[in-house]
Length: 66
Image (tube, rainbow, N blue to C red; front, top):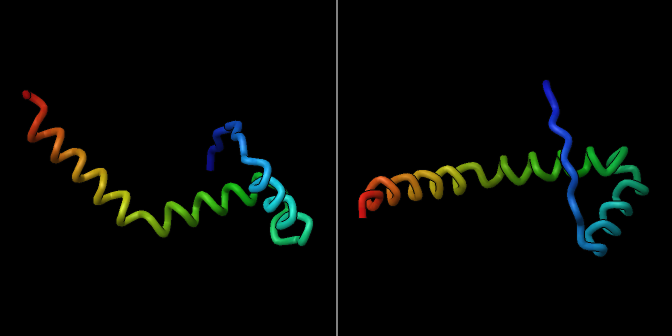
């Protein structure tokens, strides 16, 4: 699997909570925590996101010449 490196900024409270999860042993590092969080978010919102993208495409198709 290929990887893409990116930089994110976290609010200090969220960063603190992430560090607490890492220190508690739930994740080996911040990268693992963020990857798992993003994976779970996308997995649980897949249907909602697909429906929204389809609606946006339909709206664009209906109104693109206006």
